[in-house]
Amino acid sequence: MKRALLLAAVVLAAGTARADLITLKDGRVIEGDVISDDGKVVKVKLRMGALTIEKDKIVSIEEKLTPEQEYAERLKKLDENDAKSQFELAEWAESVKLEKEAIRHFIAAATLDPEFKAASEELASRDWHLVSGEWQDPDTYYPGRGWVRFEGRWTHPLEYSWRLSQQIRKKMDERLASARAAAAREHNARERAVAARDAAGRAIVARTRERADTEAAIPDAEADVKGATRSRDRAERLVESAQFFYNQERLRAQRGEPNAAGQADLDLRQAKKSFALADFDLSQAERKVTDLEKRSAALSAAIDAAEAAEVKAEKDEKAAADAEAEALAGMHELEQMAAAAKGEEEKAKSEWEKAKPAK
Image 1 (tube, rainbow, N blue to C red):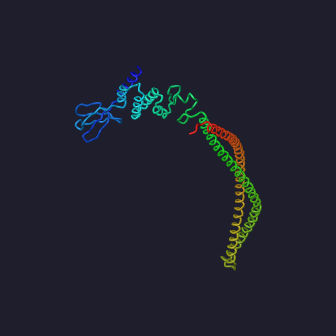
Image 2 (cartoon, rainbow, N blue to C red):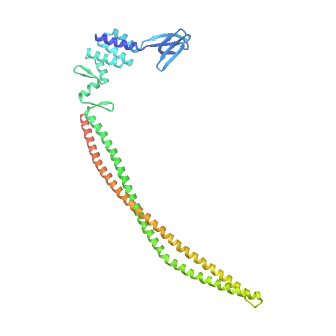
Image 3 (cartoon, helix red, strand yellow):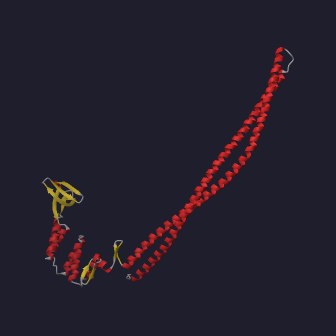
């Protein structure tokens, strides 16, 4: 009954897969399923689509059994009580990549004849195990013994513990490296803040000194303005006097009286020149006062900016110091955890080294 059910299942499976060999006149042989033939063209189903071939280009069409179909034929002829026949059918099934069928018949051969080493070796090579007279596949055998599926293979519990502790240690080392990098960044940030604070402090001192020197020069510059103003006023009075003398001498000259008009003209020119020079000196003195006042205002603004920068740098330094302290605390905690993980990994490795079978 069991064999009949097996045979029925194989026949049903085989019935769904056909194969035909189409030999063409140009010597090519095409393998596929003929799905239609109208006498003029033949349509063939291939793995990657369909192909239409003119009938007069075909030499022959030969039906080919699929591995499943051939297996079904061989199964009909099988002596199911003969271990050797079971083994031979298993080998053939393996050769055509019918692995499930191959294992089924290897088990049958080994069960029929426990001394049939070839069958047992084939099963063992596939990681099957004989337990209390029953062959078990890896997915049944290993879980029953506490083994764990790890990275695509069944792993002894102690090896699994070691491999897992390796991964944990690696993760801890990665986290520790990140924590150390973070602590270094925060340390650098604090140093930059300290440097910025010191630079701002130096700027405040330097600008304050410059402003003091500038403001100290303003009274002297203002005194120069007063002196230049007096000089210009004197020069202006001289111009007025020279102008009066010049006008008098020109009137005498116009009346034909003896005069000193020429000298008066020279004196007037010289007085005007002296006035121009005095006026220029006054403008320069006034400009100097203005420049000093502007310089003092600019230095005051620079001092305010430096003080603000110093306050900001102090805040940044405190924040960076707090962040660095936190990062260092986290780093030290991770160092302890990483050391513990290393110890666990070494312990697990030692236990596995002692327990694993010798090669």
